[in-house]
Length: 621
Image (cartoon, rainbow, N blue to C red; front, side, top):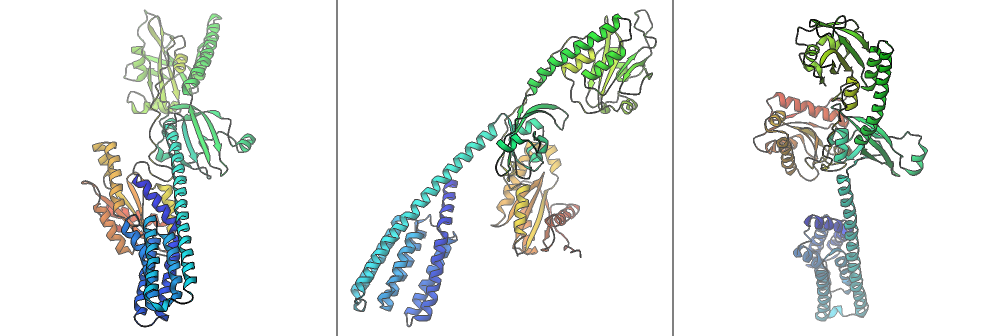
């Protein structure tokens, strides 16, 4: 509630600040006029009163006067009327009543408290009446005229006061409604089971929910600022999108960085300002179910074709191998058998296998000994299939075999007849395959029992920590916000120091205490650094354990002192290193950051836990 009230007060200051500023300017002019025109004791007193009133109104306009406290309201209300009545009394000139009229209007528009404004207006009018009563020179023929004008001014001030108060109430209601709508949208956005992302007019992603990150297998930090084109489903000339702003949608495959696949139904909607709403609905289960039915039909057809060739006495090896390669979506398949066919129960155990059938690789006739610890020998001896997503990491896999077939993932499948292994199928993929699905395993096994593919659903809900321009972990501005605000600071004609702060040994901290502790350290460090800054300073999370700072209006020495306080504010026993550079007013933001980064590198090389300044920029002709 206090935050909302502060926002409302900020809106009130914005709405009335210009009026208070205008009155402040008037009283500055009045103070100068009094000094130039008045004589005697009235001259210094009225000049001082006018100046003090101008200062108070100026502070109120700038938000430096605590108007939420009664004392601030009383001061703002009394000074104009006291000054106006005092000028009438000290000069004994009735025409200065106009200053009281203006003072009443000033109170009506500048003082937020109704009771204090009314009391001050009443006090001013009463003081004027007392002055008229006690000073005979003021009771001139124009007294009635000024009395009527003063009354009209008081009524006008009351009307203005109520108008301003009503306008403030309307603004508060409007702000509350906007905040409620934004909160509801954010809740729906975060809780949506479908992946939802928002891209700006440049096609850059500015917001994603947890489901979107889960589907594509990338973190929010990786997605924010990236190109949305890979997730858009409609061509540029799609007339339906141009007419309705919404695409019909398309089924597409998403390959995650770890090699796993998800199938989604992708749709996109565009606003009038060319912002795009991306929606990814996970249909992996449905797609796999449909694919399983389709692959079952294809597998049945392949087995039938092989059976027909076997019945006719033809060699079925090529038919089986081609079917496995097609159904398993593999790049190559090799069938290895004992020399001469083998397979007899009374025949001596073979000492080697020979590649008798190949598709997609030049290994026909290759011989593999069975007296070693190779993967082929193990599968032939155990009769159990083995799949390796990363065979290069297993010492039992021959490096020469991987090079020969360009294998990134491999499956070894025994071919068993009456309980005895008679051959081995080696299925290879030139791309990384995280796991073999049911139809791939059935295609490789051919007549093996059909096995159900078990898929588990990962959690779909994870909170979005802040939007468009906020880092979700620390609450600081993110890189996109930094770039925008830094560009604005570089348009000002005042000194600017840019710094990069990097937590020392953060990877070791993460490895020792775990990533949750690392995230907590980043959050606490961000809070500690932020509290060391002043109004107008800027800090943002650059990425990982790095923070960037912009310190406008400071000399290098002043900036160095502040950056050292920030270094000392690092939480716990941890330390940070900081590099900084003074903008030379001509270099680009990229070059300025590069110099600050070089200074950070120097700080790291100097033992860490220190600050280092960049060399003066060199302007190239």
